[in-house]
Image 1 (tube, helix red, strand yellow):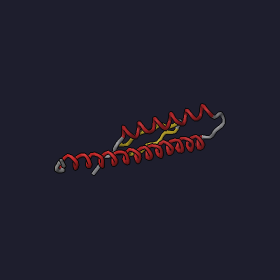
Image 2 (cartoon, one colour):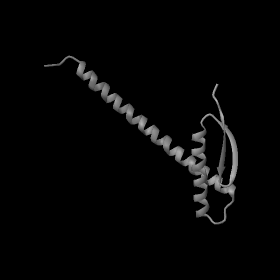
Image 3 (cartoon, rainbow, N blue to C red):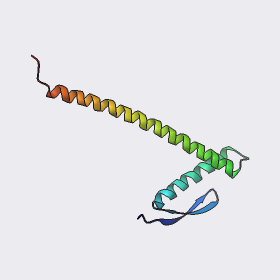
Image 4 (tube, rainbow, N blue to C red):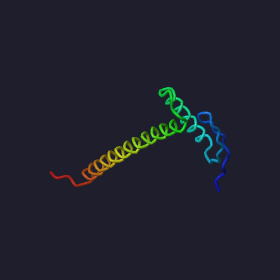
Length: 98
């Protein structure tokens, strides 16, 4: 069974306590979210905390979608390279035709 630790998060003036098996990662993510919300708050003068949270969530979702696209492209490229390697291996082990 995983050991979970209670972590105190401060995000844009809000304090939240959560239990996590990866407290350091959770703190890192909370700091990223706090920074993102503060960056949006600087850009928009009159915006609610809820709207800031939505903007931060949409921004994170966009980054996650982009990472998924990049991962899919890299997976495709790896597959192509593996096929080329297999063809080269096959050519190398095939009897020579002279």
